[in-house]
Each structure stands twice: as C-alpha cells, then as structure tokens.
Image (cartoon, rainbow, N blue to C red; front, top):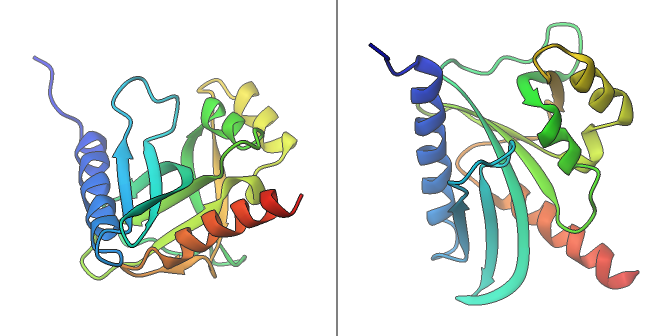
Length: 168
C-alpha cells in the first residue's frame, strides 16, 4: 500500500507557512497563487497589490521546505538547498518575470532564506543539474538573504526587477 512520504508532508506544510506570511502582508497587498498543475519546479506566483489595487507585478516562486532548522555552511556564508531541478533552474534564464527561491524551515520561530534565481544560477549550475542522473542539483543562498515572517525582501526583489525593466 502506498504511503505519504515525509518529504510530501514537509512540502505541504512549507506551502501553508509561506502562504500565511503572504496573507499577513500589509492588509492583503500580496497574494500567493499556487500552481496545482505540473509545476516544473515552480510552486506558485506571488502577486503584489497597492492598497488592494493590482500592480501587475508578479514573481514565480520555488519553495523548498525543511523540517529542521536551516543551518549555514561551516566554511562559507551560504545555506545549501538541495533537490533543485534542472527545469526549475532553466526558469532563471528567462527574463520576463522574476524567479525567487524560498527555503523555509518548519521549526517555530525559524527564519527562511531567499534568493533571486537570476543572481545565483549560472550556466555551469544548469549544466551540472542536466548532467546529474536525477536532473537535480544544489543551490547556495547567501546567509544575508534571511528573514523571519516578513516578505518585505521578496517584495523588494519584485519591485527592483520591474523598476529596472521600466528604466530600460
């Protein structure tokens, strides 16, 4: 008989925790829209509003969850996020919409780590994932990209992305 794996439980709980953070942002000025169809590594869209009015600003979100406290590497100022698929990494090479990876701990009071995929993914990382038998690889998020129950850093990534596009 099939059973539900602990990784699936962690995945579900991380989405719930993330969605709750989004729902608490400035009286609803952000919305997390889950992607329920085959997501190819993308779990949802984060949409921004201004006093309830749509801004047209979105980001693709890749969520990774951990049942444990996330601990930075001992020798370098990064946290490692394993199991990131080549198809998800490929999203980082498009420039139509920002792509943000969120690595979230389920421990109460724990912080989450985040990164703009455009800044942490290289052709070498994509090639490594594609050549790996599993089609997955590990990404490194700077330890400075850390927040606790506050999505303001994600909002900043999104706003900066659209400001750069408008100035070009």
